[in-house]
Image 1: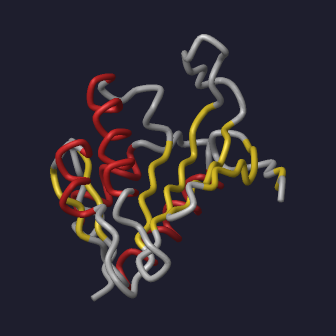
Image 2: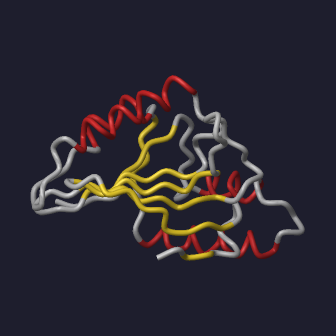
Length: 159
């Protein structure tokens, strides 16, 4: 059975009044376009809520990121590398590649990420353009799909 599921160290229940208020409080008052995008996301989430477990991705992925026969499994994250716990990020990368070892033509795995571009020394600069990368298995093909700003504006598709 297909499902939508995720994890976060500090999840917010976007289906609760308290959760929606908290998310709205994160939007700057003069960013009306951001508030409109949030309201659209909240309405969409209300029609098809997603389970968000309180967990570290490094511990969560081995159970929930494994490819399933007859289903495409997608692992996604956004702007985590600049602020996530460094050891956890290393362990998540290991977990993703461990899951990829089980991918097949009838159980593909896709790893989609929206992250700030890396410097040559491996550090991340959150002020740089964000890159959208996709790696798919069983082949392990890695593609840069697009760049944009941190809010998803100014998308430059590279396909």
